[in-house]
Image: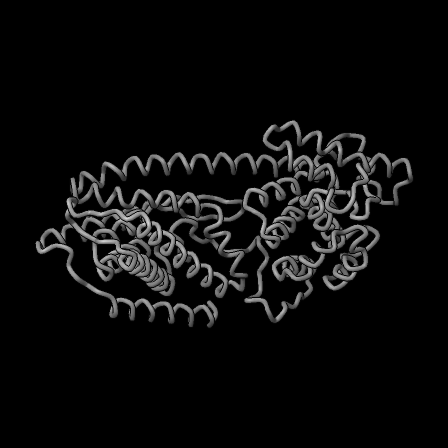
Length: 456
């Protein structure tokens, strides 16, 4: 664990301690027993929901998912800031140290950042007119106050964890945020709308009210988990098929997966939406599946240059790949188009359509660069892999002819992509001074929480 991460943990812990000293600790009810019973109920609920997390595999990485955030946000509606924050902090402390057995420094950080997240949500809730209470007759659900509290909770939580991951593993902050929150943030925010219902059911029915909501919530979460796992199985099957195709040529083994990694990174750098990024990654993975046809086998094994007839035959592979990909109805449209046109040159001299400029789908333009870069950084019988510096020179030389100039600039400015290439070639890719931090190869990124984030 590097010193920057330790300093950041120390600052976060200090901020959490100062926050607990500065915020209000008023009891909600004049009945002490009612206060303590409510605090105990939400402390136990927070512990149980966080301790019974789900393990989800996303690609080659693993994330952990829990519904603890519903109880933490619900506590904001029932208790004053200090009590709500300490309730969440103690629940995380028990779960992380007893059940998950994380290192002490990470336990301390996760407790601190969750304390800050809940405290910030509570302060915003009250500032916007929200009123915490244990009396259902006095409950006033302000949509603005509750909505703002939910947004602030996830903002503080995900940003705090993203900064920790970036500092601990020399990763770019935005890349860390995408992995932690990008996939599930919409689901989490909408699930958080159950927090007011949880608070109401508790003050109306006590513990039975909690059970009436939590059990269906776990059922929904289980269905969500099954859906994610089925999606992952489909992706694994696609990767298996691609590996089987590439096994015929030792020099292209793993090529499509590497192209998919680079293409995904470029799509994220462009700020494309999550769905579009996923489509481009899938197209990059499948861009060469047409080579499964037997007529390409001798060409793939040939170590000498192809003659004109062989070259013309090889150029049909992009259309054949698109036709195969199009047999899957969910892939028709953007994915098929990106596969079909990934050999179109920016100046219109490519194939199969001879289209140019922005008429080429953005996914195809990205895959063109990713495909070429991987080929240049792979050892071949006739040459060794090129260095990062040489790759950059080649991209600049053919910018505007073969490659989209704006995408070449994106590639050059991306520390994440250049570090990925440098890791493969054994070179070094310096990061511009304006970058927040260095980036590590994506295949070696750490495990992180994706829902109610924390450092694993």
